[in-house]
Each structure stands twice: as structure tokens, then as C-alpha cells.
Image (cartoon, rainbow, N blue to C red; front, side, top):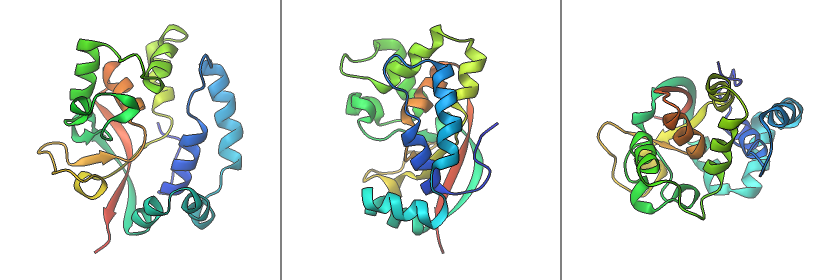
Length: 186
């Protein structure tokens, strides 16, 4: 079950950025931080204004879309090109394809966020880790709108954030995730 109950992409982005795991941080500490952070992060227009000062292009895209909560298969999602310093060629297909490459070849030395997420496996049961990684929905937009690349048949959605979480979930055997879907306004 996801934490977000209304479609607010700027709030989701600000909250997700505040909850990126720190090096060596335990899941218990992340949970404590999540509870404190969720109460203080801006929402609605205030969140959009705050995010706009950091990324005006992203906010313009958010304003041009209608948002709704949904559920998608990980194979329908595409990662950000070069996410978390993975080779670009690993990020051309779906999240499941990226996860398969990580599984087959391991993580590159420079990779960090995914490594920190996967390090949490040793601290808790897999089911508990999956629940934490699903705490927030993944923000998605039509891939051709988000990235300058052709759409991929069977994987029409591009992740705007949460690529490392999505790859970690795929590696943990999860098939479907909650998403916050942005669709261009008519």
C-alpha cells in the first residue's frame, strides 16, 4: 500500500528527494525520517513553487499533465537514460531489462543509490524491504514526452524519479507497482 493518497507530483518529488537513503542508513532510521519529513514537505501549489525554483522544466511538464494514481507492471516502465551512473545501453529497455543486466553483470563501481537500496536486504526480511520501497508511488509520464527517445513497444511509460527503487523491486521479484501517472492535458 502506498503512502500517497492524492495525485500531487510535486509533493511526491520533494518527499522522494528527502527520503533518498544515506550511506549506511538503516531502514529503521529511514522510517523515522519518513514520518518526520512527510509532515513538513509542502503540498499543492506551494510544492510546485518550491520545485520550480529547482527545476522549472519539470514543473512546466507537471502543469501540462493531468495526474492520477494507478498500478503498472515494471516491464511497462523505462528508466532514466544513464540512471544512477549505469551504462546508457543498460537503460534503453524496460526496468525489468535493466534489472536483468544488473543481475547478469553486477553493479558498476561508481553506482551508488541502487547499491544503498540493495544493502538494506541484509537488515530486514525481503517482504519488509519491498513494503518500504513501495512506500511512495513511482511518478511516470509517457516516455516520449519525458525523454528524447522513441517509445518502446510494451514499455510506454518513463520514470521521472525512483529508477533505483524500481530496479531494486524488479531484482526482488516484484512485478507490479503503484504509480502516479501524468498524461498530457487535452
